[in-house]
Image (tube, rainbow, N blue to C red; front, side, top):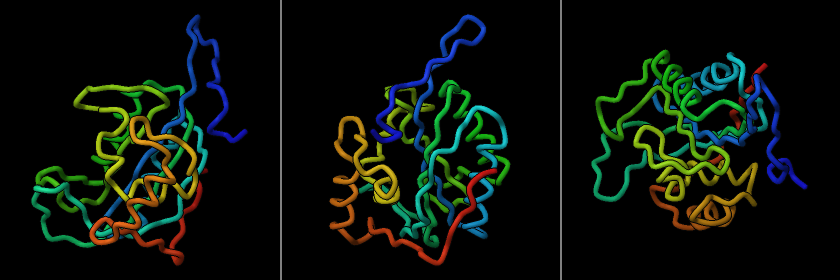
Length: 195
């Protein structure tokens, strides 16, 4: 049995049962020191209690992406990783943490699909489904994004992305498309695990 196959851990706290969920983040940067930005984001996610590190992917370099029909501003390539953690925090609390980290690292949202110092997406949060526009779960475009699927498949190829299939199969299909959705593994770059 793999870590992703285990049953949720339930711990009684203050008369309530808290369920541990597996959460998958996609983290990217294409402004400034991209690797340093991602490392800072990883460290900041774990600075406060409530997240337990599981794994992160190798670093990938990715051509900027926008869905068909959307305008993509001129910009440099991204560095991307996928990070996996376990948490008993509610999704809303985790989203607040993510937004605070992006803000502290000068993330600007003025140009849609524009360059950014940091972009952190919550891809899945256990088996929770949500249509909330502030946090749609699973992420509605994860199945289209090689920069999510390929790094994720490096660490959890057999996990299912709800509604779309096995992550390893989705990643292989995206990689075979090539073109603007292609990602390149950067063997020369590495991150440090959070303390």
